[in-house]
Amino acid sequence: LKSAYGGGGRGIRFADDEKKLREEFEMAAAESRAAFGKSGLYVEKFLQGIRHIEFQLARDSSGNGRHLFERECSIQRRHQKLIEFSPSSVVDKKTRAKIGDIAVMAAESVDYLNAGTAEFLRDEKGNFYFIEVNSRLQVEHPVTELVTGIDLVKLQIRIACGEEIPFKQSDLNLNGSAIECRINAEDPFHDFVPSVGLVPDCNLPYGPGVRVDTYLYPGCNVSGYYDSLVAKLITWGQDFNEARVRMSNALDEFVIEGINTTIPLYRTIMDEKNFINGNISTDYLEKYNMLNVMQGELKEKHLKESDTAIAAALLFSEYLKGQYSAGNSSKGLSLSNWVRTGSIRNGI
Image 1 (cartoon, rainbow, N blue to C red):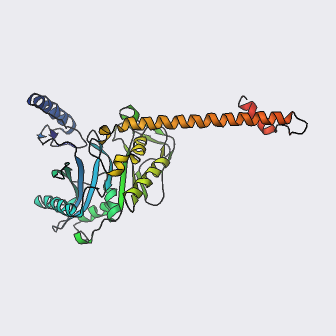
Image 2: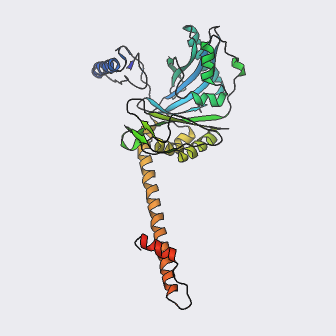
Image 3: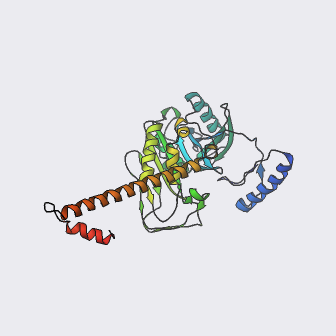
């Protein structure tokens, strides 16, 4: 059951028998009414082990329709996208052309005018199921911009001004691979509870193939009244692995003080073998216990840092003992003033 008027994962319920269907119907309708003002629902076939794949499209007032290839959006939490990338590892050239043409046909059938997105589900047998057309630019549109070289915001404005799309379908080519991580002000260690407050400082990553779209700046305030998205981190590479490595490095460089974010989870995912090998589906986080993996990695990191600190303290202690011993011998040198001062300040 899915709200006919909603988005963002709201108003979606699952039922596997008649009794539950009645209960969940009322719950989904109430949730839809509260969130969107209307209670109408779709009834759709439930699919397991699916991938969420969408196609960017555009159509102008002269009837010219184009698709700008696909985006893989299967890394999700509660039906909300977290990571998107293009191209998808399960979409070959033939399938890309076929589903892309279907997306354009859908736009033509309703005389669509704008940039937009046709969304599909793909099952384990490779079958595609149409979900909907989102009549707007998506959060993840930079992924498509990086692999096609097309500025989608500019294209949308040109279409709104009555101009024709300035390229043919045959002019478009996929160039490399791009990945986007949605940096949300949520705590992945505590069931993604919202995190709000002052950001005293932040460090944005940069370098070849790295793009950051954000409103963050030192001293800004993250409010709880709006969407939790505070930044979009996008990387491009000549292939998926290069884009992934750049993303992993960029996540390490990305520092946002004062609030908790989803960055630690994305660090874990970028190095996870199933993600690397393309073995993903919309239940990826649950299937591979990624939150537990993330917590385990962080605990191990803290233990290593603690061991390093202890080892450094022991080495410094041995150094001081050696200096004191040398200072008390007739041939040795006395302990320098800066070491004495440092020792006193540190209580040694």
